Amino acid sequence: MSWFKRNKAGINTATENKKEAPDGMWNKCPNCKKPLLNSEQVENKFVCQYCDYHIRIGSAAYFSILFDDNNFTELFANLRSGDPLQFSDTKPYPVRLADSQAKTGLTDALRSGHGKMNGEDIVIACMDFTFIGGSMGSVVGEKIARSIDYAIEHKIPFMLISKSGGARMMEAAFSLMQMAKTSAKLALLAKAKLPYVCLLTDPTTGGVTASYAMLGDINIAEPGALIGFAGPRVIKETIKKDLPKGFQTSEFLLEHGFLDFIVDRRNLKEKVSAYLRLIKK
Image 1 (spheres, helix red, strand yellow):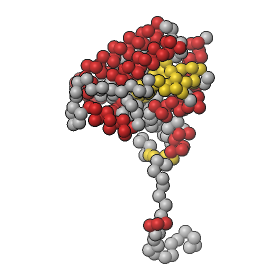
Image 2 (image 1 turned 120 degrees about the vertical axis):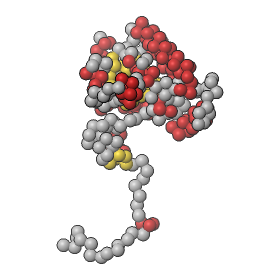
Image 3 (image 1 turned 90 degrees about the horizontal axis):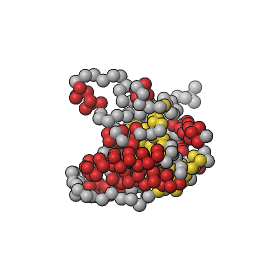
Image 4 (image 1 turned 60 degrees about the vertical axis):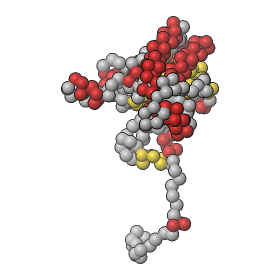
């Protein structure tokens, strides 16, 4: 029975003969902690095949899921944030921006693109949490505003994917002004009788929730997403009461009428396409 029993002790493999797994091949589910093969994650739309946990992804992954054959034209890619307040905390704001741009390969916390979803034209704007926590600065607001103008000009639907920690404190009032600007632009989109689909993902908080993230013709969310204005800890300390179980999850918000429905990411493209076809008739 030596085929499964080690007969010799101290067997070692030389360092040059050891094989390491290539970086980026494996990941670990944040929820169930099971190992996930990267190629299987891509095939499964970055949803854990063991527990159905929706792993946080950015604009590149969402665009590949929603646009047909991942073909799209990026809009307003050259917009960059300035430093109107000459803000500095642990580092100057321009340095923080440059660091984030180098780390993520993004110019800011939102990308917008025009392409086809199941053969139908659509403009999709998607936030990236990896860029300064997906914070809403002046560039984010301007890209949304220009994307809405583009959708109105070409008479096509607009979809926004929210993933943000809220307003960008380094831009102070300039950031907060984006709430009013984007809301006004969405009113023009509604006046043009063009649909606005808003997808709330984990997390969607702060001024983003208080403005464009909750103004969709339909507001939908991914399972288990954290959605709210202030964080649960802040709310609990303010009202001095324990919060309900599952507070600020997408399931809680659906139960209380803040969402139209929750959609699994693997069915997202078909669900949104079906909605757009229905209202087009």
